[in-house]
Image 1 (cartoon, helix red, strand yellow):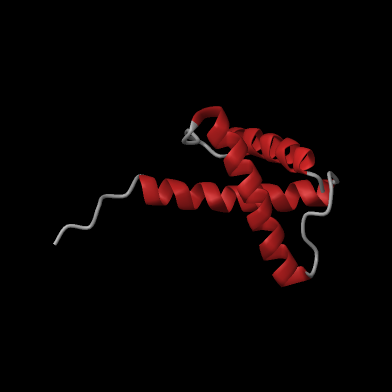
Image 2 (cartoon, one colour):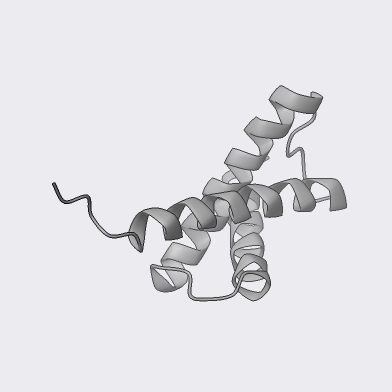
Length: 88
């Protein structure tokens, strides 16, 4: 996939993740694009390790894989950003 395709996929997945997951995605529009793109990479890596198939284009399976990756990334970011710091 080209860089433009990854950015398009990242934007689409970031917007979908914003609508599927309750709450706010940190970072505004750039955070949405970056989170969606990073989520697509994460989902692709996980599914490549588990099933031998990752994000290969703009087809339905790739969109679902990227959406799962973005959801996992969003959950991790929210968990890290909204937890109380450890105090001794």
